[in-house]
Length: 77
Image (cartoon, rainbow, N blue to C red):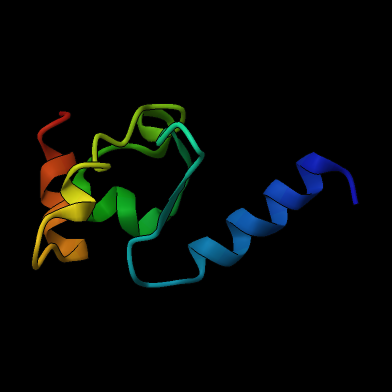
């Protein structure tokens, strides 16, 4: 499978999930952002991809939930 085919398949799978899902690389840049994540945050996928998630420190906060991480991302707009 070609790399772009892997990404295409990944995006189809992630978009079929009703929960907001995003992935990051080792530098915390967003590498995928599903349709639900865009809806929850109000941030278009195109705007999110490649952007630093800013959640590295937040991910270590005691009691952090995915919802709180997404609310932090909403402040991008």
